[in-house]
Image 1 (spheres, helix red, strand yellow):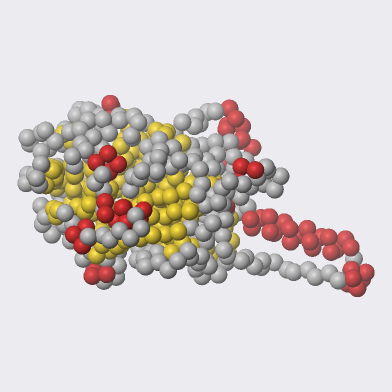
Image 2 (cartoon, rainbow, N blue to C red):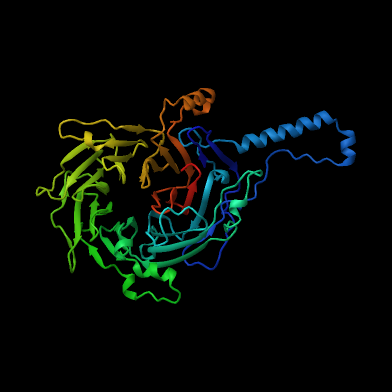
Length: 495
């Protein structure tokens, strides 16, 4: 895991350690997950050990001893400063794991789960916005990919007492930490809802704070989409003795318009607070489900352009009838729900491979990012989208060499983007960094290792089999990502 600022070197610790799980610290017995201490491993040096006692010191040549000690120190320094970069480094060996450098994280916590999860989302809370103090609390929802269909679950969690994990210099003033509970153990509370199938994607309505309903949609591999109200689960975390009604463990509506065709596309409208949900499947169909005064209604006529799979859907952040889709034909398409033909208004060829994911910028609603199956990703200015010409992206990067699995604009900073990839990394990018900045240009000339690294790259976070990454809208810079071995809750000093 590594970090790089606009004028800093990338740093990473890639150490050979036994490939065993790190020690677990538990606040109490947990049904579905437990926190893992990311800094609990004890490292053993593979280098030569020099033992000096009084007698040996008299006999050993002092210069030779000093040379050996200096050699060991150099080996240790090289090991600690090794850089892991997905486009350059060799894959980890069977006995190697990548350890986080705590000095580049402001917060890093791991949650082990009973099964891998392909998706995660964050529940808005009532703890306030712009939260920067510690310990922190987050509410989230995920769903499993169990080996047996009957073992799948939707898991709602509250992680609290999340301490600051930033390692400071010895000479740095620690007064500001005196009032912060830095050494407390994190607490994980959870509630589960049984599911019958693997969930490909989960999304929580962004209007939960305003409406009091924690509407949460899941897209399942059996082709059905479910809508749950997680209000009771959310309430249970903060109300001692509260019993969750049995009805709250069942979906309030099931969307069956896709038949038995599997789907991945799923998104709630950020502008329609009554509830407007888009779902897309692998046969290329997109259905709109809206809520009336008494029920949920799914439009029977699908939006359709081709038989290629709809991989992702994003509502516009500026117009409540406009949405975008990404598909395996390599297109980003812009649609309008008012169209009687249910055809796209504009189709743009974004990649020669599948377009796996897209993200619509919250703050600048004419910017859209797309992540592709070849590892590249792009940012598009939608004002350049026309029916007659195929535009070029305003930014394009091919740093990742494996498929992009998630992409997300920072909702609080329009220039910051998080990208996850099948190369087991999440990268953070700052598009505001100018490549021709004099300070950066000078540094890149002096440090050869930076020559093939885009200056916009801020940070590289390693997580095995990472699938989804989400920004926390109320905790600036905080992200939650899900991978093969659980959830990571993290915040870097770069953002």
